[in-house]
Length: 137
Image 1 (cartoon, rainbow, N blue to C red):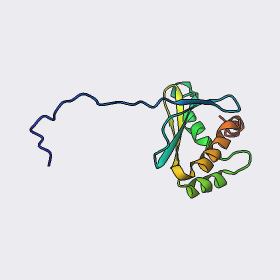
Image 2 (image 1 turned 180 degrees about the vertical axis):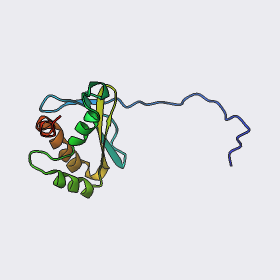
Image 3 (image 1 turned 45 degrees about the vertical axis):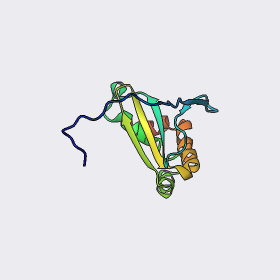
Image 4 (image 1 turned 90 degrees about the horizontal axis):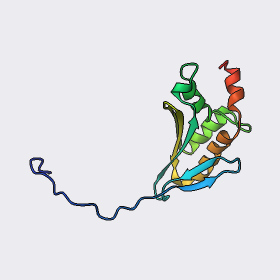
């Protein structure tokens, strides 16, 4: 058991190695930074979209727009996307901040390629405007 009445020994850092992101540009011109060395069992893909809580003209608009990235694409319905995410054991989330909205996708590393392809189909298509218009936003 740790003796909490005794101060731990203080020492300097040994060798600290920082991993810098690798910049990549997608075909549609969107810049992407890849962070990590690929040894983790769970991967996380994050997308930061401009527009957060301060830019909303209706409550929850940034949050709901973030969730729309998982609600189907030109080739798949929302049900098909949800079924694929369940099949791969993926989890999705959207978190609006003051100036941007973060959309996260967590998944198991050994099936990361099909998960990312599924998510990227939803991200690079410009179908949000039509969906928001139908919702009356």
